[in-house]
Amino acid sequence: MTHVANKALTASFSLTKTASDAFIADTVDEKLYLIERLALALKFDEGTDDGKTLGWADALRMPAYPKGLALVSPRQVGRRRLGTARGRAELIHAIAHIEWHAIHLAIDAALRFEVMPKRFMLDWLGVAVEEAGHFSMLNQHLQMNYQVSYGDFPAHAGMWDMARKTELDVVARMALVPRVLEARGLDVTSEMILGLMRHGDPEGASCLALILKEEVRHVWLGTYWYRYACTLRGLDPEAHFFDLLKKFHTPRTHVSMNILARQLAGFSQLELDQLSLLGQDRSTPNNERHGESNCGPNGALNFAPDGEANSLSQA
Image 1 (cartoon, rainbow, N blue to C red):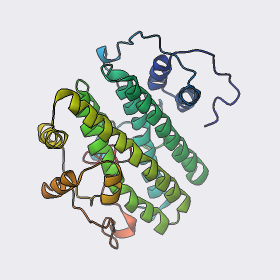
Image 2: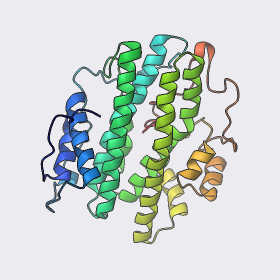
Image 3: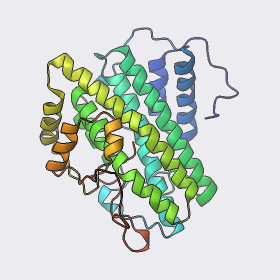
């Protein structure tokens, strides 16, 4: 990020207020500027917290979108045919849209659950910074290689549904956003990387490879704080995880699990085995994808990375 290169960081300001301002900023430049300001404060420990609550959980919170972005029903988002430049641009735009939501999800978690330790807030503000970096990288790639920007294609807001459903329960939020929706991003990204490589966009593939590497840690943080919150309530983390999948009617997917990435993200072998048995995913133990398993003619992806079942599949 370079948005604050020529703007001095004030000696003292509120991390929570800056994060709140970043959440509601509805232009790309303003949001990235505020996120970079937040990043510098986190890096140099220059932000302060006056101990006053923002009352974040007392009001309805929804992502802020650039004015030019057309929001449509999830069912109106079709396949992206990677054999065409437009199809590749649409795919990358969809992932950028997921990263845009991921910024909001991380800030919302950081500010909403005030019962959690300060480290929880700092961790998720740090995730917001990294998600903003992912978004900025993808948006720049769109501009430089496809002459489009975020907002030039329609998108949907269905991926915010799980945030609304879990807004009162930090255990459910950590279980179902990082460990379900975001974990699915670990599963589908390898196939998208291969698809972009096959169809002439190695730079885009490199962007996704970097994102995949960093998203493992985001899911790991979800695992860590999920288990922490379970311990506080005297819950068995493994058993309760599957109770939550049933309670919230988590949709099944038709994508193979990325076993190695999920192990690095903290999933236990019991959890991985149970997910396979429940049909939550179809796992390939060595994480190998075979041939055109998820691609149709002309490189059409048979999964929608920002569709209803896989909403937040990159966040």
